[in-house]
Length: 150
Image 1 (cartoon, one colour):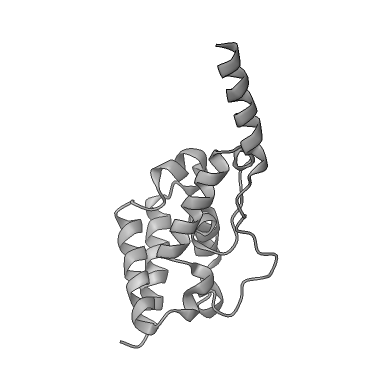
Image 2 (cartoon, one colour):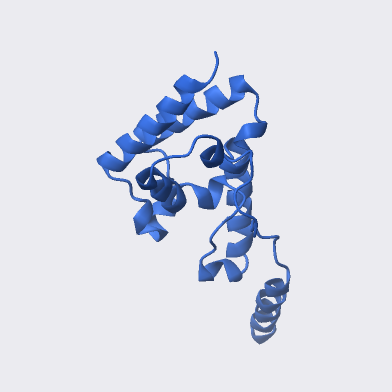
């Protein structure tokens, strides 16, 4: 039993040195960023920063527990998956058809309260959107959608 516990401790300590790459950009939002192309109101910008950008942009704010493995690995995978579905930082590189589709998905997911994910809202109280915030965000997304050529 002591040998098993010792091996477990050594493995737990050893995995702390295997770190995932972090999603951090020191640059200001680039020309492909949705909020650069279609600047939102200050209210919507705050909602995006608090509820969306950590998983859906090129710059994630990591909590302290991201430094503990395997939690860090799980978060890195979660961010990578989120960015593969919608990346605000790369919006301008999408085709017009894909841009419209992504905005439609954003509106549907937020209206249905499927986004932000419940697991994210548990750790980030500021991401629990009010009905007013949901309306502001979806109205902005709808206005952007309407500006895009069909």
